[in-house]
Length: 311
Image (cartoon, rainbow, N blue to C red):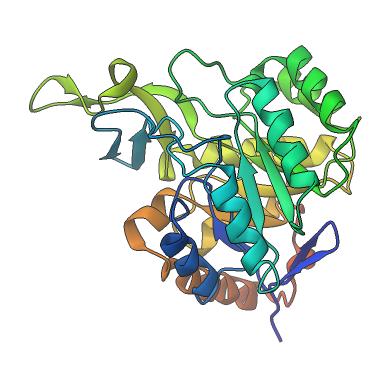
């Protein structure tokens, strides 16, 4: 019998799929759809700031060949909103609460609030938002990343992971892994969108989104090779107890399989979920099961992280 179960930090998941932060997760109504979706093993909330935030103005999401481009600017309803939601529903499934302060002080203050709350789940500390004007991606600054994690783990004791941007250099895989291995992280989520792409509308000779002069994060099928590379490189370098959530380029069951083959424990879906809706989870699970059956696998551990290389 084929099983798709997984676990992170003592939390057991019926299957490996969840939404990517930012998609179907801003309001309680959207979160309910993921929570109730057949085939969704968990959900992650919209990355929260301390207070409600409107995000960037104007057209901020557009479809493009092989995916999407966005510059949302962290629109969300504030930490208290998502903390209340997750506490209310945490007995139904293991849940992820995502936070993304605009400053180190924001992140530390929110984590103190979570530490003092009744939340019993996993927190995703988003160090990788590329779409806030004037704000760099924290996880590209290795010294600052270490400094933040040092301060976080001086008081935070609940299961915590980090959301990472894509890295493009082997030396950077080494550098970020050396930092992450020094802390009791439950997981890493890789990747966030590929930051600061640009798409031109051939009919109008304009950019397709308004914020930041048209610069935005790339998602969807186009980012899959980068996502798999980051999953693979980090799985090779991180301590085995640090689990990996693979994110990026998932449109079908083979994409889910590939993330797991490269070492992912869970797999999240963003752009395709946006276009197809929560019914996608059941389809992806069925396609994954069919691939596993064809290859003679009954459990994910039989092929997780077992990508083969050429001689």
